[in-house]
Image (cartoon, rainbow, N blue to C red; front, side, top):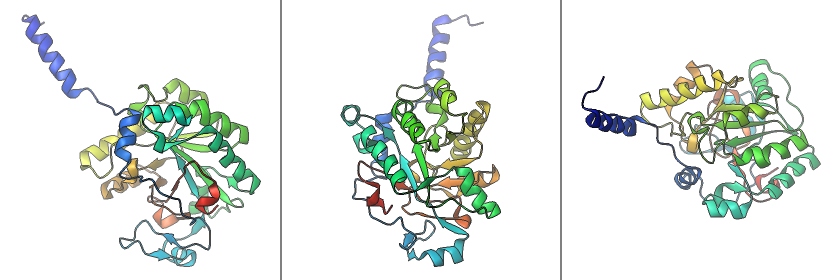
Length: 293
């Protein structure tokens, strides 16, 4: 029992301020992301005949599909699309994250484009089965991923994906759930258990994975536990915040049994020996043909 009440209250306040988690808002994360996701014109590289940059090459040497398959295979051409916000563009501009937003009308057109051009949107399990068991992939396979767990995904992304019956993966920083601008566990439960949306690990607080070992360990394993506690995280896949890959992060992911991990490196060729540094295309408000599809 504390005798000096005022002093004790002050100590408790200091402790809570020092040790309470401080999470970034969506706008703050968008601001931090700008240096990693510069505004640019997408290049058409997502074809089997195109040369694709390998994530492990320090010189970023372009290799043919045949060369990648020989070095890192088995490989397959599986363009992986990734989004952040799916929201009205005027609202996104007012909120300060327009650069990271695809309007619902563009998103629906992009999903229609996949259908019209006979692409097959596959699950993460399909790619895992290809790597581990040689299971044949569907014709013209594509993966759809959404990062950061923003609340607009439930409002706009999920209804459109359900309209087309497309599976997707939502990479979720679990510590941000229940915060303003983010989804709640209740919302995740509404769509995350029907095999339509895979709710997957995107760290606890959206911390970059080139931090110290203790931070990296805490971020990955805390998120893993929270996802498991809510019945998610199966199969175990991961996306690096800001696309920043750390060697210790790869070690932790492998130890914890993660089967796939995605960067923001551009490319469409997914290879088994690079399964923890897989490429993706960041999609904007434009035709998917701009990305080689």
